[in-house]
Length: 150
Image (cartoon, rainbow, N blue to C red; front, side):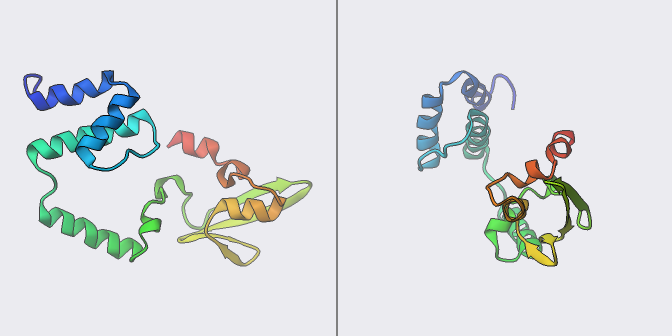
């Protein structure tokens, strides 16, 4: 894509569009209502779509291979595919948190977490069980700095 390319110009123009204009472009290009996400999200997805329409999308073989890999790693669980595994600590990691004078130890497993011998899907569920109130699990267990370093 060169600066003389009209596709380049369309992608570059997204930066100066208002959020309302971006949502209108989304409706035109995607044929759906835009999701309630950030401007950056809309810009990146629209940029890809503009290029996809101009130059073509993924080859059928590539799509098939990606689906095979997703099936291999996540089975038929599409919700599991959306989990950001790069933000989760390595399996076997022990998370230790002191709360109201008591120490709590959670072990990271390959498919979630374990606390007091019970499996959990999220740290938030464990934090809620410990405190009795809603907490963001990664915040409760002090993983903010871990995420920022990534």
